[in-house]
Every structure is written in C-alpha cells, then in structure tokens.
Length: 231
Length: 231
Image (cartoon, rainbow over all chains, first blue to last red; front, side, top):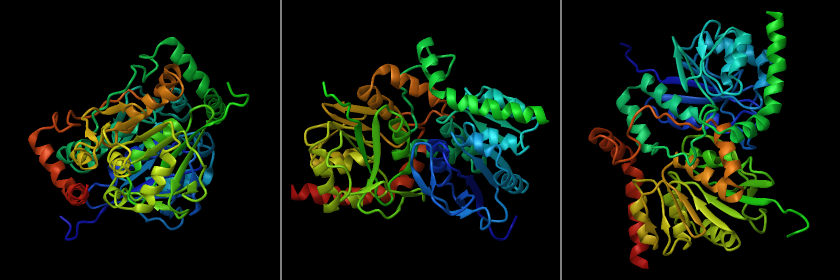
C-alpha cells in the first residue's frame, strides 16, 4: 500500500461541437468522487463551444495536462465525425490511453476511441443511430446502455451518461458511495414518454428522429466507409 | 397571428456554484427547440464556475440581455443559499419574470424563484433535502418530480431536469416534438441502483446522503429561518 494515497486522475476530452450533456452527466458524478481530480482537456486553452452552444473553458490543453491519467473519458456529439479524422486528437488519445486504467466514452465518443485504434476487438456502446459505424474501426457494436468489456466502459446515447457514470463510480470507489451519489442526484427517473430507444418508439417518432439525425449520420457514414476502405 | 414568427426566448440564469447538470439537462433539450433562442444569463460576462468546477462563459449579463424572455429558468446548487439573499439577482429575476410566460427551475433553483417572491401560494418542487425551506418563502413544497402550478414549472433534484425539460418542451412545442427529442437523447434510463429518492433508499444510503448534504442544508436552513422571521 502506498504511503501517500495518490488521487485518481480523470481526463475528460472536450472538442468543438461535442454534446454538452454527454460530458456533464458523467462530470457531475465523477467530480465528487473522493480524492479525485477531473480535468477537462482540449487541444488548446481556448474556450470550446458545444453542439448545444454552451461555451466551456478547458482546464488543461494537450501540452500541459498531467503525464498520466487513471481514466480517459470521451463525449460524443456533432464534432465526432471531425475528431475521428483529427490526427492530433487521435495521437493525444492514444498517448493518454496507454497509461490509463480505464478508457471510457458516452454516445458517439466511442467512435473516437475506436478511430484511435483502442476498441479493436472490444464490444462497445454508442448512440443508437451511429452504433453501426463502430465496425468500420474494428469494434463490436453492442446495443446495451452501458457496456464494460475488460477495461473499456462505453455508454449509449447522451442520457446514458448518467447510468454509465454511476457504474464507473462504483468501480472507482464502491457501490455504497455510488448509491449515495444516486440519491444526492435524486436519480429516480420519470421520462414523460416511453420512446427512449428505437425499439420502444412508435414509427412516427422514430422517423422524426432519424430525419433529425440524418445529416450527422450521413457525415459519419462517409467517414467510416473511407476508413474501412483503407484498412 | 403575427406576420413574423418571433422566436421563443429562454433565459437560463447562471451564478457561482450552481449545479452544472441542473442547467445542462434542460439546456440540452431546450437548445434544439425550433425557432428558439436560449441565453445563459449571469450578473456579469465573467466566466462562471459551477459547483462541479466547470467554467462556463455567459451569453449575456443582466444589463445586456433581451428586454423580454418567454421562459425564465433557474438551476439550483451550492450557490443557492447566497443567491436567495442577493438583491441584485433577485431584482433581475423579478424583472424578467414579470414579462415571461413561464417561470421554471430545477433542484434548489425553486428557492431562488421563491425568494424573489414569485412562488407565493404556488406548489413547487425542489431537491428532496431542501424542499421544506420553500415554506419560509410562502411556497408550498411538493414532492413530485415535476410540478406544474399555473405557469410555474419546477423540477426536483438535479437529474429531474431531464423529465422537467421534456415536459416543458411538450408545452412549448408539442408532444410529437418532445417525443422525438427523448429518442434523439436516447432517454430510456437504467439507473444501476434503486435508491434515487429518500423513500426508496436504504437507511445507510440515506444517512450517507444526508451527511454529504449537511453543510448545504444547514446554510439554507439558517437563511430560510432568518427570512421567515422577517416576514
């Protein structure tokens, strides 16, 4: 046992047009773990604008962040299809990932982990409309809300970040603490409708959602196909 | 019917040590409503640090925001007990509230609405550990997750913001659109534990949560008691 109890260090990647809630659901949970440091890490120290138009100031940039993190987390969002082609970001992710105990993501963040070559042969979750593109990077799409495959922990679309983060909190601390956080966050959800997955949604809702996501899906489909052709 | 379809304007108050997820759950939903403008409004343009240590840049300050908003929203958090005594903030809230169609909050944000005198005789939700203090300001504590009393719409603790926001989205647009958003956000929650309210939690979890929240609760109790004594 170490004489000093070193803090758990968590790096959460942020990048232009990530989905705010993908980050903040988990960040709200992880930020209160005991003896834990959470850094929002971006390519530069410039404020980052999310895809819901919130401007967030990074804590660290790629150059000045800690040499090692215990956990690396990547949110998804409209910016994903750019990030999966961004060599500087993928290099950074590979570098911090090499020293991390856990690699994690929510929503289409798993596509960035996959594009960095870190989900080859791993089962992974993603947003339902984007999950299939994991295959182009050698990952195995899994439709569960939270998927743990060895030390890779990935969540499904956006709101899955809460379920993901409470499970990660239990792994990093213990179930007692994670239960306490669930009560502190009053997480006893009561969705107004029963349509949170394609399987549960009625046809009209599904079609409207598919239409709404069409631009992002076709951008990602093109990028994934190009990548698959080069493999 | 107006010749031009004026956008729906939503003001979301931000202040030091608000709870990030209180804001971002609803903001993620409201930011994609059609023909809608969402502003994060703070006392000044200085970046605001939340109680989970995220630094967010406001879109507007009290002086330069729109003259009228259709919806006013207030998140809760550790900073609530300061804000309920902050005359500049309460004056601002009263001013924008006077022209708004809906006044709304999540978590202890309802205490700020109440302290501004805007929930007198209204039923309101709040975080379970802070709900009782609504009475000191003439509001009626209600333990439902989302409470709509006339044009006041209040959510319970932190994660209730998602349930609140989808209901508000249905009011501001229609149920079809709100259902589509629920599917886009993949909101089919799967909490890892069954302990999201005091009633559902086991005794050990409840005691741990009460201990964790004790500092904030006693600060708010003192402030509410002083206010009640002056009424």
